[in-house]
Amino acid sequence: MAVPKRKTTPSKRDMRRANHDKVTPVQLVSCENCGEARLPHRACGACGHYNGRKAKSTKATAAS
Image (cartoon, rainbow, N blue to C red; front, side):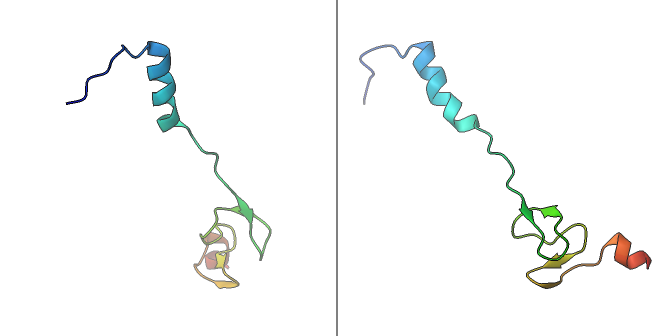
C-alpha cells in the first residue's frame, strides 16, 4: 500500500481542494425572436420561442 513520504501542508491541501468548488458564471445568449437574454438550449421566458418556432406559451401571450 502506498504511503506518503511527507506530510501535505495545509496550503497544498487547500489549493488542491479549491479547484473542485469553482463556480462558473451563467452564460446567457440573446433570443433570436425578441432579443431578451436567455439560457442557451432553453426556450425564451419572455416570448416562448426556441429554434425559430413557438415552443411554449407565456403569460403575456396566454392572457391576450
